[in-house]
Structures are given as structure tokens and as C-alpha cells.
Length: 140
Image 1 (cartoon, rainbow, N blue to C red):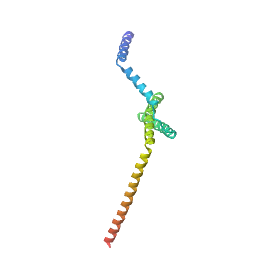
Image 2: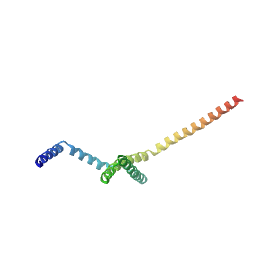
Image 3: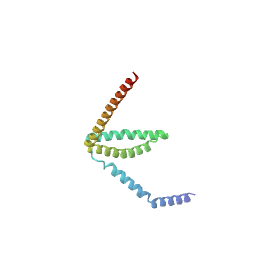
Image 4: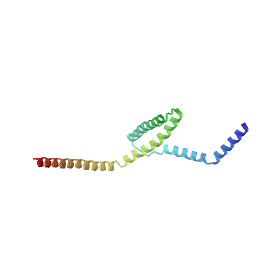
């Protein structure tokens, strides 16, 4: 019986090695390593914000995912956190870098949108008061 199990295990390992899964796994780890060390340059404040945001969001997501499924396995949670924090760190670093790179444009656009919102609120208030006065005069 042990010989049959050993023979089947050998065939399974041979199929596993010849299937190309190891090369895909190697490609994944190469991508993961490069992703961790190719984050865009951000300011010191931006880097601190990225690290804090990554920490809180990653821990929160790991907690929610594992609490939802009712699992609690420290090693799996740690590996999932490491993977998730790397991905989220890269995403947040890119977002902060983009904001820092285009901050003047963002401020101009937000100023214009804010000015239009204030103008809309003032005009709607004026028209509302005008309509209210006309309604009050019509009732007299």
C-alpha cells in the first residue's frame, strides 16, 4: 500500500512540476518583491500618511475578512496582512504621489467647484425668498 501511495505521490509531484505552476509562483513573488520596492517618491508627510493609512486599512480589512468567516489563524492572517499591506501601500503611495504632483490643479478645480456651489446656494436662496414674497403677496 505504501508503494502505491508513494508512486501516486511521485506522479502527482511530476505533474505539479511539469504544469508550470512553479514558474507562475516565481513570477508572482518577483512581482510582489518589485512592487514592494518600486513605490513612487512622495514627500515625508505623504510617506507618513501612506504608512498610517496602509496600516489601519490593512488591519481593518484583515479583521473584517477573518471575523466574517469565523477564522482565526495567526500565520494565515499575517501572510494575508503582508500581501494586502503591500498592495494597499502601493495604491496609497501612488494616490498621494498623484495628489502631490497635481496639487495646484486640484486646488484650482476645488476652488471653482466651491465657488459655483456657493453661487448656486445664494441664487437658490434668493429665488426661494422672491417666490415666498410673491406667494405671501398673492394671499393678501
